[in-house]
Length: 380
Image 1 (spheres, rainbow, N blue to C red):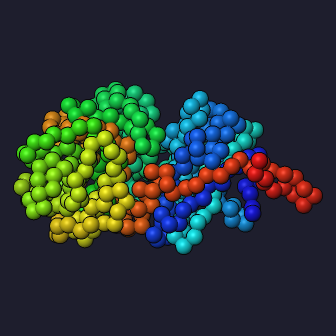
Image 2: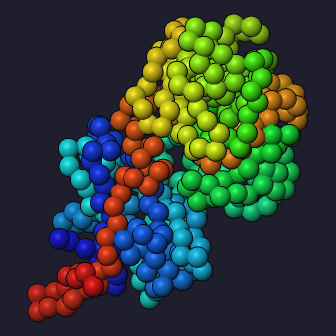
């Protein structure tokens, strides 16, 4: 097998093709460096806090190096979260694919391919369809929520440490207090997609919800135009009008003050549990997916255009008020992403498995052995 020249150590990362239903091009894969994931903690033993002395490549005859975004790097706790991807590269469904995580304290910083959130290599992990990627991981205590995509849609939190930093499913998350916390991006003119298709997803963890039979909503994500809510993910505690099932996630679109279209997840959900909740609008029709399940169709003809003065908000029911004033989310939000275009069943399934650390398996540390014919890596 080929190796990336100039690196002293590596660990194999192997995709599980049973978690990938169709070939996915330029798909962002998440790798978790932690105890129990092979020998990935040895990366920290080698490079310490210098997280630029790493690389990820495939095992092709001439290895292709991937771009890497560092979401978390805790060298003392030996925990890290990396996202990697590259335009034109495919995650296959028919067979597993091997990648290698290289690391070497003596190697030059790999700034061409590795970077933190907002860096050039970090943004290259995500295809251009991504219009917003918020990891919601509190890089700092400031009011800025950094956008990891190429769309430069940084968010603004209510205040420093509001929402506060918390443990997430993928690294760190934001803890919304259910009283007045929010994160918003206003005047997102580059999100003026009109009647085009788009999708969105979040990792949500509810600390609490009401048992009220009223139409009380707990908002994870909302997109609005200048006058009213356009689409979003909400959690509704009252009974479904037909099935009577309570406590459901709901994807909806609103074309006027009182004209709603929606799709329900169909199953009661509980607090203190992580969910990947996704919605999409394709050809004007609405769909929902929970925890990577196949898209479930709902109302049709929800053709509300995205307004030129559109805004994105997480954690509150945000229409035209500044700041938001109602229906605040009580819980943690780990990921928020918005994509232009359709998203397939295979894409959302692989996203769920990648973010839940069930897409990759992790190997042992390998070091090079020199022979008369060159060098190869040996598992130690």
